[in-house]
Image 1 (cartoon, rainbow, N blue to C red):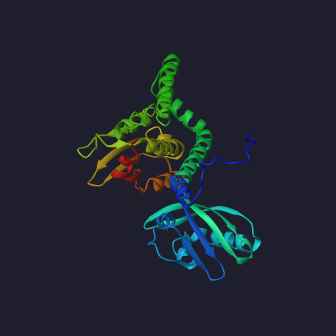
Image 2 (image 1 turned 30 degrees about the vertical axis):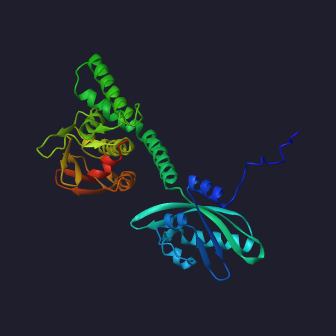
Image 3 (image 1 turned 90 degrees about the vertical axis):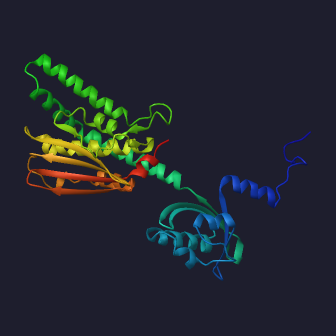
Length: 327
């Protein structure tokens, strides 16, 4: 009877079979002879680092590609493996050309010869997903904190545009339903293709609850720019944050305040301009670290121009980046 301790005769784990397994897993192999500072890597490891394969490299050779903020962590981890003889697992960033990639490594020191053996795996997609989840969690906390400000602003808009309690209730209900509809754009709506949306449709849905916010049409307005599924959440966060800040500190906090949004398409980029008019007294509180961070994540730029009338916020995004987020 086979007690499970023996392997079937047809199961072999030679070098070729192990290479098949590591290729499927996207694993790059490396070793480090600490005494002579010699690192040997396989083809996949060199590819992960974006380096030309050669017989051996040194710690200094790889350090030139490691992100400056992670270099101390990497060197400390290697020292722990080398001198403490413990297995180690850590993630760090590298520069591969103009692109930042995340690399995960597991390594072990093999006895007294001070040789360290390990694997590299590109975990950029996972780290970006974790960053996105963290951003969404921060945004949810931010929304809860500002919930009463937004609700008060929407109720104020309803009160100013109606004469009776019944009219106000009906108007307020419609505004809150519109706001809920805008938030629904943040969540998946079916297939990847369904989750892509035209930029003008997205903006219209997001500003619908605010009667004092209008979309301005111009010959430069891009009617068919598509915002991909993975960018919808970020764009919704940006517009929501601008509206929330405006309701607290800007034009939407004033009885006569107005906000206009215009879009302009150029050869390679899209500009979205948020224009505050007849704002209340403004200050640096209108700045938003969260909005700046989201814009940066989309490889865009943001500028704020203060005028006598109010504030102009100009958002610039690469057209290919917005469309490239499409599913």
